[in-house]
Amino acid sequence: MGVLSWAILLFIAVLLVIRKLSRKSSVAQKTKVFVIGLNKTGTTSLGDALHILGYRRFGWYDFKSRKLFHDWYSDNLDPMIKYTMEFDAFEDLPWPFVYQEMATLYPDAKFVLSLRANEEVWWKSISRHTARRIWIGHHLVYGSYSAAEDKDAYINLYVRHQQQVHKYFKDQPERLLEINIDKGGDWTTLCDFLDISSIPQSPFPKSNSKGSILNADHAGFFEAWDNLESFIERLVVYYWYYGGHPKFIPGKAIGQRSRSQSLSDKPIEGSR
Image 1: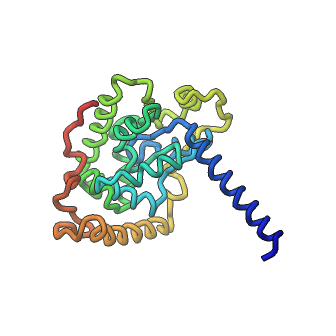
Image 2: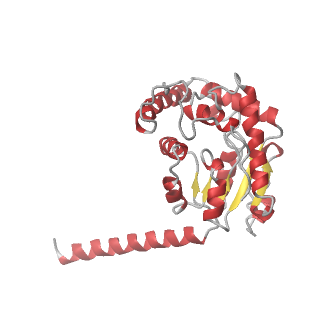
Image 3: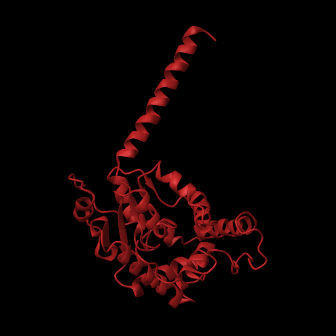
């Protein structure tokens, strides 16, 4: 290889190093923002809004997020902490359940609690969602795969989660913003909360709505693909995360582990 070729390779390597260092610097300068509403509360819309505002956003990444969920459920927060070093905005499960740890890890972080108009509106939305997505994560969190068949369990956690969040941030209200997505997104409120002076002129995002392509899915392609992923996921985590526990049957209950009790049955945690 000639001198010119080596010089070109060295130049490219230097550029890559500079790009990586500048990326880390820009991420470090961003205040972390965690969207901590439960699924089907407009979390994707808020994630899209944060992306428009220039945040490096970690949303739902299917395979990656499924693994992250089971890491969290197995009391391993290291992968989540690693991602917080690479991104600065986070939404969807399991992020709503680690707000206390993230608030401690990042004392200047801010949190957005996304809500629906009321629990009945949310339950109807999550019922449609769980009817299409037979996901083990719903079972582990809410204690049931189906919101339609176990309304009390789902609404119980929805209400308790709000109570927990309010109790935790009662002495630091400046770190928490509530957004009712059914009232429509509000750029001004979000930007004021994040100390951003330049307000976008584009409409506030409205993602994953009832009429979106993923939710309409008239041919059933996305639902079939998602259910295949979920089936494979249950088989994998049966052995990888939960040690082939005899009470864990894919599609059934998980058995007795540190987080085996559904979150909807757990008492409200105290504040710091």
